[in-house]
Length: 266
Image (cartoon, rainbow, N blue to C red; front, side, top):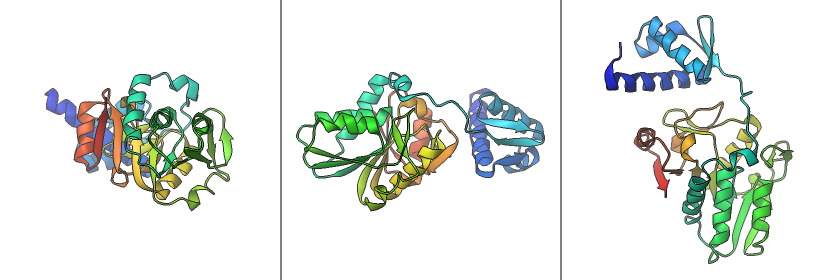
């Protein structure tokens, strides 16, 4: 049985790893998890019950399955106020990485919107091309044309996030290569990698990753250590993570230990 601080840490890590296994295999039996992690079936049931209570998986007879992706997604306007200062700091740190003449892909989201606003403030930047699937970002940047050229991906509108998705959402991205991507997400985890809550948007995000030379994830501290339904990529497929000071310090160190550079924006 785990005990003390070390035991608590071991329990947390084992449960995180179990969650990854469940999401990789859709359904996993209690007996299989017991063999994999070298613990009793009673311990496995306790772990699965704890994960189920947090809404991360669903318990079924004999094991566990992935949760349904029906978790409520909050509108852009509702989430924009959360961690607003931190998102602004992340946006400024991200914008400082952009060079004149560069092509930038800006994903949809409140943190990537902060990146767009920070780009507007860098008046010395010239001949920037921004490709985005976010209508609100396109409108934010419109005022600074022609210094910033804005290309909208096209596609089908998702009103909640003002984003454009498939069908027809990838035609522009298919013609982009060598760009710097600022990718939004709902979770960054040392083992599960980068994940997103919305499945249709996940398809576009994966296509953005394929188009980019530099892949930079921007995520406020609440996203660090989280795992949601749609996997976008592993940490080894990302160039840099920019997050804020609210991110869990231990999880940040685990992400760094996994090989990903992390910048804490202040």
